[in-house]
Structure formats: structure tokens, C-alpha cells
Amino acid sequence: MFDVLVYLYETYYRPDACPDSDALAKKLSAVGFEQEEISKALGWLTDLADTTNEMFSQQARQTAFSFGFRVYAENEYEILGTPAIGFIQFLESAEVINALQREIVIERACATNESPISLDKLKVIVLMVLWSQGKEPDGLMFDELFLEDEDVKPPLYH
Image (cartoon, rainbow, N blue to C red; front, side, top):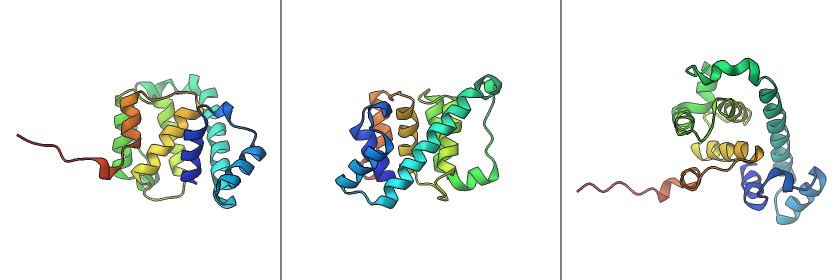
């Protein structure tokens, strides 16, 4: 599923540039993705749109998100794990995502049914949330989101 999501992100600069679901499924199949992965990815994206619409429609009642500290429920902590929660907090403090987007990221990460979710997959989820809203992280943050662990070189101390 995540390979399909990355392909969509790289291929279509905005979600409205994507063809309708049937045509998109055919294109993804023609590129070589398996039908099961296509179905999972398209279902995940549909749920992302539903979650985003629901969150934004409730935004007036959720103003407390902007001023409070997010406490994770036990099941969220188990699914996300410490590295993912730390990364989400980093993105929010760097103002890459806001409190509402954070909640969407958490909901979509929990929907993957992976425990704990890998940091690489969480990064894809963040990119897809931003992409679905027509937002792009700045260049440095984009590099951070796509930087592979093996690309990280240890710091040099003099």
C-alpha cells in the first residue's frame, strides 16, 4: 500500500490531478501494482478524505488542540511507538503540521493496523496528509521526510 501512495505522491502533484478511482486503478495496475495493494491504497485515501472533512468540519469545536498538550492514549502509544510520537511532535513544533493535521496523521497511522508503525511509513502518511490538502513541506523538511536512515551520516566531532 505504501508503495502505491509514494507513487501517487511522486506522479500527481496534487490530488485533484489524479483521474477518477476506476481510471486510477487501471493506471496503477498497468504500472505493475497488485490489485490488493491498489485497493488498500485507494481505500486508505478515501478514508483520509473522509477524516479530513470530518476534522475540518469540527474545527470550531477543536480550538483547544491549538493551546493544549497532546496526551496519547495507550492504544495510540502502542501503535505509534516512541520514535513516531517524537517525530510528530517535531513536525508540529517546526510548524510543518498543525494540531488538526497532527490528529489526521495519528488517525491514519492507527488505521494501518501496524504496531508499532515504522518511521518511514509515518513519513509517507505525513506527506499524504499534506498532499491531500494541497500543501507541500519546504525543501529542507521534504528532505527530512524522505531521508533514508542509511543516508544519515554520523556527526563529525572535531
